[in-house]
Length: 225
Image (cartoon, rainbow, N blue to C red; front, side, top):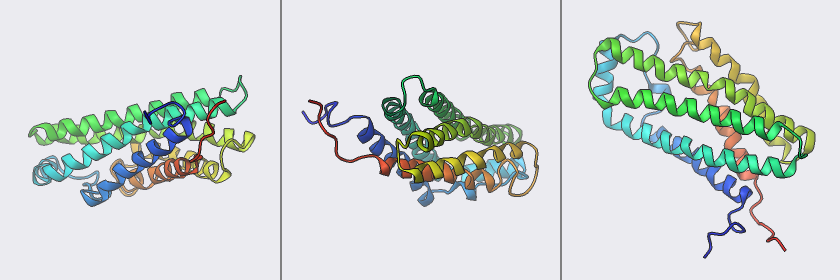
């Protein structure tokens, strides 16, 4: 059988999981891009009407996002195995990466759950606003474990050259920008508000790092002797 540990070791699995994890959320650009979602100041009755008018497209968008981000768990586990095998035995960087990346994924999936509950049945304007804010609040909070995960990865690559340096550059850029997501809990209007453009633009660096790191994985594997 072709499905063996030799054929599907950690680098190969990280490659395909990362590509799939990038591709599925990218497909939401053809269904309903997140930057087209209503802004922070929308009224509850307007939000409920928007949800009803776009229910099918939004459901497909959330399905694609959920499948894609769930695949990040496989990508993160495989990348952890790569780092663990290539870094010194006592290094904490692989563990810091794995735990933090897993935390990021859990917060993202929690945000998707809140939005899926919003789509599940018709709700009052007040309840719609609460679930909508909870969705974006969880997405914003995922930025903090993302900082630790990307920072750990960047440190591993810069210190030990375990992957191409450009993947560390992407990780460092993402680690530097993601703390700004905390501003969404303070700023009430404009690009840095909770449902502003920052909630979309900043995670783009995370997606770029996932794709860049996935494609940097070696394609050919030398069988063990």
